[in-house]
Image (cartoon, rainbow, N blue to C red; front, side, top):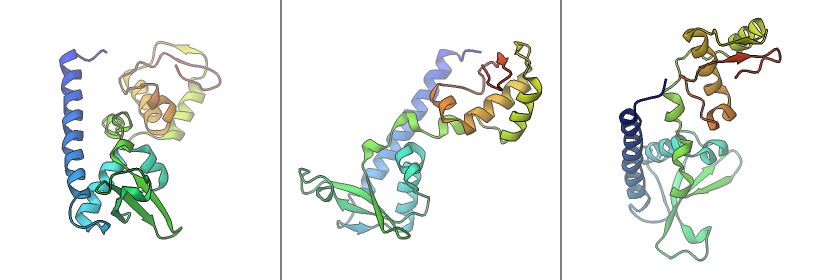
Length: 183
């Protein structure tokens, strides 16, 4: 089913305003106090939550909700930056590595909530593989809503390709082929 335009608009506005509020709070923390400065636990939670939600770069680098971070002069990473410009810098004690991220590294289409809102908790990869193997007879079009939800939810949770191609939990399951690919 295609969502009503008003519903799509409401979801878009909620996402935009949530991110704008988040960005304003994160920016305020970055420019608070001296620089460089290690963030306290509350600030760390705010900034890490923001980047974990909106940045695959942060998630891929291994940032966790408790990762230590500080404000840092941007000149450390970009010599041409103005002297008062600040950035975020994470420190990974186990490797002595540092990670520099700016607000431009938080990207709206990488928002995890887009996908998390569609998950049910029943996204069992082995169950879907068994279902696909059992149903792999080039079956067409007669999938129940429950079968569709099982496969789509699992693909949303476990497949970056499916998420990036716009798969939704409401996307109709049309076919399972003998190679266990789904369409």
